[in-house]
Amino acid sequence: MLIDSKLLTGRVAVVTGASRGIGQAIALRLARAGATLVLAARTVSALAQVEETIRATDTEVLAIPTDLTNDQQVEMLISTTLARFSHIDMLVNNAGGGPPRAPIVKARLADWEWTLRLNLWAAMVLTKLVLPSMIARRSGTIVNICSLAGLTGKAGEAAYTAAKFALRGFSHSLFEEVRAHGIKVSVLYPGYVDTSLIPPNQQVDRSKMLRPDDVAEAVYNVAVASPNCCPLEVVLHPQYDPFK
Image (cartoon, rainbow, N blue to C red; front, side, top):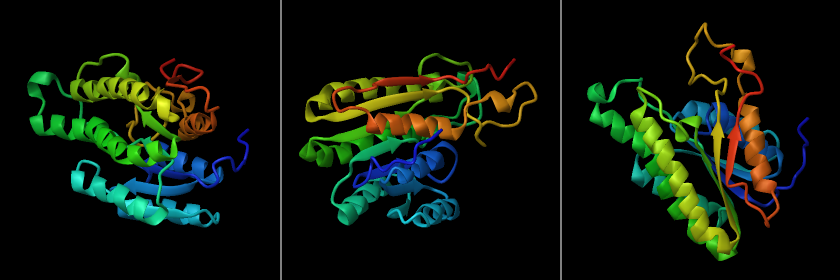
């Protein structure tokens, strides 16, 4: 049972990919805990719906439509947030995705570039932009939503897997740089999550998959963890195998 506490009151959290699925669930969970939310995603209408839902709970929220593969829009996301709230306490790099599966010899270079920009580059740039605010306050939390693809290779998903492996390495290096400033870094590896990103498949029992709320609760637990410890890596498996 989820506890409706307000342990994050006064904290400003930026969540990318917040218009649906895991990102939406994370935003709603942090809002319920009292955080001020900044929502980023490309789909304006869906983002506005999440913003309206959060605002209806009397929680302060700001939606900023953002294409995370565009450096200028990424910079605008953070500068707008700092202009409005003066600081950022939490960054959740959740946005991600990949092109249709294809062997390396048939992959399009444009798809590789887009995949690396969305899953890796955007998270790196956002992190660089929020760090000065966190270092100045000697506190902060950065959560990178990875994937089990960040732990093992998979045929047909070379660029996506490479991006997620790299995100893991970036997260570890980041932690070693910022731990002395009181900043927590965590990388989450969810297994199969029942979202629209996973197409219908008769071989998969979706009722056995993780739910977006499961990932959101893990992010919340990282945010409220003791400042004396850092859950650097969190692997989330469904209790039951969706393929059985």
